[in-house]
Image 1 (cartoon, rainbow, N blue to C red):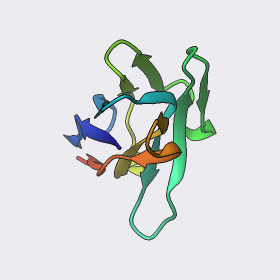
Image 2 (cartoon, rainbow, N blue to C red):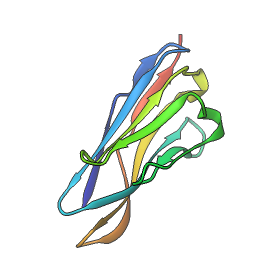
Image 3 (cartoon, helix red, strand yellow):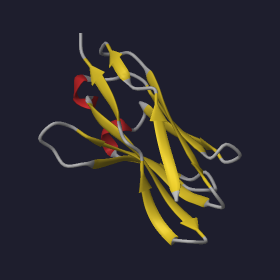
Image 4 (tube, rainbow, N blue to C red):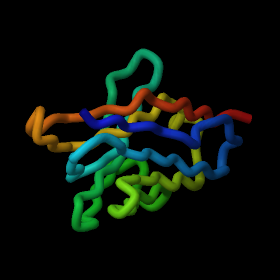
Length: 120
């Protein structure tokens, strides 16, 4: 089993910045592509950004140029630096990891979510 624990959400004014972190833990696991998704009230969960084990990144159009995803493979941690935040970025942000364990094989893992609120 792999556990993903997020941190770093909160309340920020429009134009401000936040940095989200997500650490993966468990026994004898591998984490491959990691990413961030978000779900606003009344909307479906959407992809924000992903980063592969080799560092290739992908972003949804609405965050390009404002958000940066990165990872530290030694720490099994993925980050999301969010700058120039807008009210429409308000959502619960979820960490996702494509992982593998000897016991369960390949699986998709999710964190518990962290609230990001952009408001004046």
